[in-house]
Length: 147
Image (cartoon, rainbow, N blue to C red; front, top):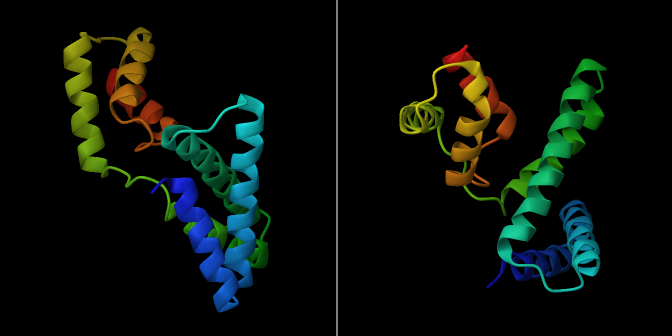
């Protein structure tokens, strides 16, 4: 079963159970997936769907941060609930310890020594852990280690 099928099935279950918030969130995700499919003019594979979901999760996280700064707990809660639903369909994130170890190994593997080698390290880590790490976090950690 594809991720898209799982989202559709879960939306149907939410409709039957009367969970309007989950239903509406999943409808929005399905809509975003369909728009991407129309743009590509072909079916999307799971990696492409995950990319759409990660983008949606990133937008929710940014909104949460802004609502927190703006002292809007009501809107922050709504975005957090949506993020929780989206996270159900994303691959499991790797732990900070695993990420640090992977960055250290990658630095050794590519022979990085200065901040000028940031791009090489970032590309290798992101390739190895696609959809399992946040690029912003990886960049921050690599900068600390090389800078």
